[in-house]
View 1 (tube, rainbow, N blue to C red):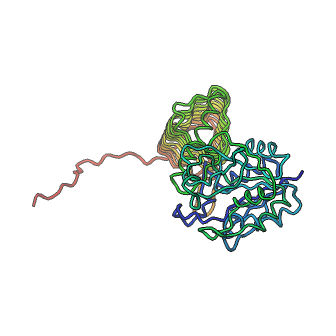
View 2 (view 1 turned 135 degrees about the vertical axis):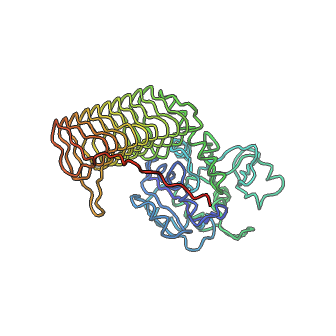
View 3 (view 1 turned 30 degrees about the horizontal axis):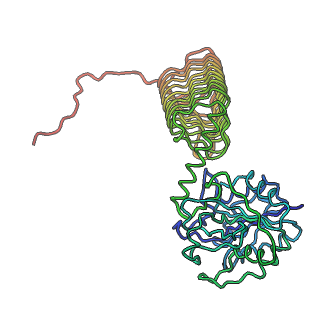
Length: 455
């Protein structure tokens, strides 16, 4: 049977107090709606349709790679009306599952269970027991425990408000039946809206039994209505990732102080200190140690790499045994080979540094090819930009670059060459020789430092 998924994402999100549509606010570095789209894909849906409204084309434009069908709800008249807009896109489906773009943590496993548990019925509903059901629609059952209807809190009686089983809004139904029920939904309620929840009462009136099941945790079906709720779900999500990392053999100094905004893969016996932020795709090899307050983005670290405090590695590859930081910054297209040392306040951009080389202090290396066993002294910079173009600096194996050197690219320093401290090198320096540029030191006899007048 073909399963179609309809994702409702048309709401304004007034309580977010933002010009950004609510479903585009990020959780773990990705839009809320992105998480729901991923769940639909993981479920194996044959067709996904997103109903958008507030924010207009901004919402589908945020997902250029998505294969979903996008349908605009130009006039927002409630959830029932929204699903009705999507039904033409579901014409070839056998069953339809309704999800919500602001409920980001729904698990595909839960949705699979809902679909499987209700395979023999025409309508299934995900419900949940809450100690405090305030704000949720209540599940009204008869004496035989059969679902009769859902009543929204604003329309509920005092007795109905005491019910603790609530509606999550997530339903699955036979497409033909759902289309029929939606066509019969009215708007005789306080909000004058067409509620999707009224489908339940219509189905019961047609003699259809409503099957129910529940999620593993309330956070799975928690919606985001304001920034405080978004922050709560962020912490829940990050806590789950931290627990998985630890179960898989990674040590975390404090599981509450890590943020993964993408994917983080750690091999065994990795240690992650506090306040680590990972973005994009990050891979950390076995026996690595990451110090406090570091930022890793789209990078790969080999076995036994040590990253000291307050370092940034963005779009770089670091090979086994290298030491980075503290306060180092590796920028995109940087490759650091085995056993290199990149020290404090060193920035490296679009450069390859071969095995065993050291750039330990207060240096900038950009657009450079540095050989093996090179020592780059403190305060060295590659002058790679002439105001219009970037140029390459090449340094051969075993070279020694004295402190406070400026290498004006394009320039080559030969194998085993030595550059004297304080030099400005604008022509190629030959291999195995000392090259320096330095004005003659002079002492001016009789000179006195100026002093301020006492008057």
